Image (cartoon, rainbow, N blue to C red; front, top):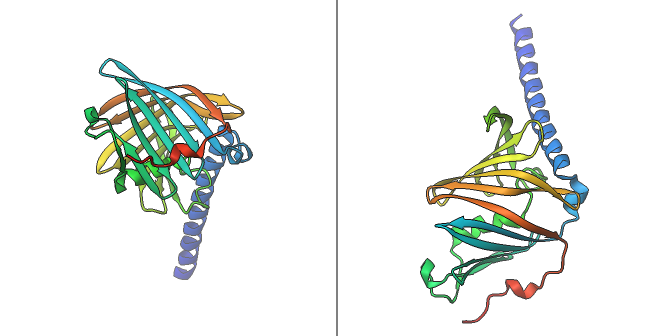
Length: 237
């Protein structure tokens, strides 16, 4: 009798684990489909995104140029000064004007910042192709985000970074991400998704951190346009 109870309990555990894993995969599959489908996502090789945000009453335009999985350049203009951050393969560099604590000359990007910026080489986040990327995804449960049901997924990347992704239970698009960067808690809200060549992108990003809050608005996104590789090369002083 005890043996039978043990076998039934063991089978129930394995069945629950299987159902749990299937639920995670179902959510992720629907998320990929909501973005536009894997074929369209895999076809994106370059992206150029123009955004803007307001800080202390000043509008700050930002241009991000991405070669998917390879190189990234982000350039913001503040009061006529350019702040540039570049990731090129496994290396990174940046230019900070004096008003932002820099010298205006190119400098190597610190390791923690390089690690953080390198994650942006993947424009669709850790859920898409998560198994192939070596990431682990766990379903925590359902929670409300802005009064809407969301699946709360805990993601652990192969590098050991953890983050909480909230996927809208109706649209299957990501509505919020919470993570820790350099020991500081950060939260990014994603909304106003719009389609560009069959792929959906969030046009509004609300960033909440210990440094303050800001809202970034996307003005234009160009997919698979020409990109000059010279943009990513560190200039001499």
